[in-house]
Length: 298
Image 1 (cartoon, rainbow, N blue to C red):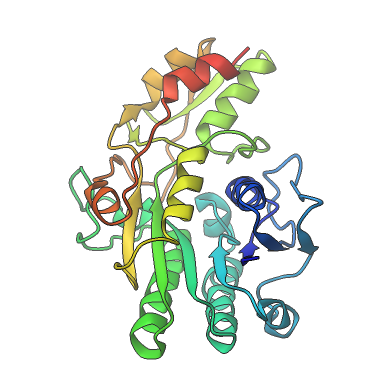
Image 2 (cartoon, helix red, strand yellow; image 1 turned 90 degrees about the vertical axis):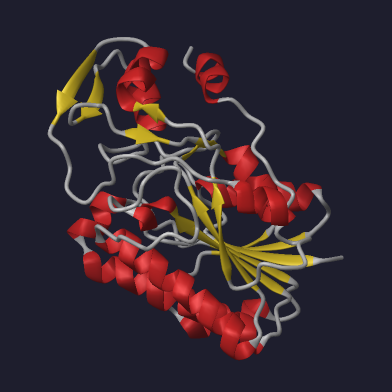
């Protein structure tokens, strides 16, 4: 039986990956310290071997990598505004924590490490559609720390021969998405506000666009990365190639809305070029944002 280890495996994307791996008959180890305060629940699968450890503590996590085949590294400070509020913690988790995961993977001869990064790497300087070859334009501690993790992955591939694949996710939504607090991802936030008969809070003018990607499609990309024969040490966009502005998103969700102050450190437009993922991973998104919202807003 193949064995996989998932950091952040009790959170949004990680728990969906864990469930899929178990369905595919993997033995699964989960590391998660329940760090995020955006989740109302954490999603520990009782069929996995679960450890409430912090990836910043190398001596705690390293023994768990023994005899593991594949590592999916999703544990992170994964939101922009909390990282702005506490840059030191964001760097500790996203840089030191990632280095710990990579070093433990190297020590135990892991066959492949799949690293979850962010489209926030592209910032404001790059025109859409965004391509992996474009320059980084990090606007905040979150994107700086996550792209530092990308560089660590590339270095571990180039220097040590550890096979890594890096994914830049574009605004993931879906089942188990975070709902709590003012900094929850916008789709989860809007649906929570609609359910509570509260006005939808639109940041700034609402004309900023996002490429929203369904979590099930993200899971499929992660599994596809186990089969590829090239692209190690490289970056892949995981999005849809379709953008929508936040005003239009609010109309789809429905209900009243209000505008709140623009936030610092956020990009204006995102839209992924997914040609590379299609060609090398044989992956493409399948789910439709509008259909999902209409099914889940009642």
